[in-house]
Length: 499
Ligand SMILES: Nc1ncnc2c1ncn2[C@@H]1O[C@H](COP(=O)(O)OP(=O)(O)OP(=O)(O)O)[C@@H](O)[C@H]1O
Ligand SMILES: O=P(O)(O)OC[C@H]1O[C@H](OP(=O)(O)OP(=O)(O)O)[C@H](O)[C@@H]1O
Ligand SMILES: O=C(O)c1cccnc1
Image 1 (cartoon, rainbow, N blue to C red):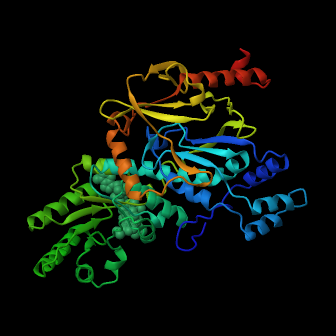
Image 2 (image 1 turned 90 degrees about the horizontal axis):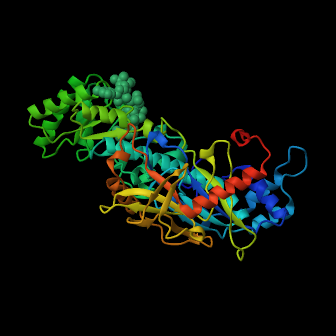
């Protein structure tokens, strides 16, 4: 999607899969457009092998709903579509209905920066079946990618152990909108800055940068190039010293640093973008220190990710900050979170009680969780998360403190002595933002606090411990009954049913 008006598109009514619209027409024609539904969005599998994910994109949902309307141009386009077997895809009367349609949904979501775990609701949408279904694609597109990038970033930032990480990914991101989402989500999850100027302007993210190899190559000598850069950017001078040879580059940078000192200025740093970054950074640090230039910072870049950064620091590389592009912006090792949006309850009208529903699968781990789900995060006396409980207020059993693991009914624990907080917060009520949009700084602070509070056993890269997400026993029972009913009603070949 090309950017218009120098920002991410908020008019995303038509940014949807065709089937959402054909289903909407079907609901409308069958008089079902006002039937009520409740959907939950969640992910199933650990991204990058990470035990947790960092929620991101939920702050954009109110904009999505408030801007949801079909323009005359949209309607004309839909009217022009033909069905494969002939005739129009959409009827004039349905398109007429769409013309004045505005969603009146309620949305509750996990706030940005908070941690989320597999299978628990990240977002819950309730309203008419018609409007809930129409929001599916754009909602998943928004939260899935930003959550994925935020999660990757959290890992990269953790590996850097407090050293600033600059996001340099715009040139390698998945299109202009991808680049904007990357800048935003990576700042929420702990990057110190972005090279993306539009994101800086739009989101108020700090921008930072050095210079390219081409700068050095346009001058007759590297020394001349460094001098020219120092004189044009004396207050923002980080020199890229690897265009030809880092050992020569550092000597030229030392000359320029001393000339800057004589003018009362300071060389901020140097960047190394190729070669053995551990060996070269150690060499360069030593040379600067020998020359009394211990304040000059060392920045490294070149296809970095959490593993290369961790390795460099394990080798004792004296690096002060990292520039990370391709592998962060493209979420190189896992390009999609696999977020899904599933119907969890429905009712004929707003005056009727909800009926919980679930989707079966031959793979038990893909069975959905029914009900009007909420989530509680239970924490120990230090505030560190211990487990999460998915529950439906209508089915709580006893004092509601028995937790049953999502995929193993035999795993049961009590949360009676733990304190908790609710994860889902109101985002949209009756189609309008439920609260003023929070600042990106607030989301970033929440992310830092959440990651600091999480036990390191869940954060390690290799074989992190499993964090327990379970259902309150009443909800687990409802789910179990629904599975049995559904399977009894089904004549199909779910293999183990016949044994
Ligand atoms: N000491 C190191 N330990 C671990 N990984 C490193 C180390 N030094 C560099 N790397 C990483 O190894 C990968 C390849 O580096 P390499 O030396 O091949 O650079 P390069 O790709 O030849 O440089 P360029 O192509 O940009 O000139 C990069 O991802 C880099 O970040
Ligand atoms: O390596 P990344 O994590 O993607 O970081 C961004 C890269 O972008 C620039 O490279 P450039 O576009 O000049 O190409 P290069 O890979 O040849 O250096 C910069 O010098 C980094 O190497
Ligand atoms: O400012 C930089 O050094 C930079 C920006 C984008 C990509 N690579 C490097």
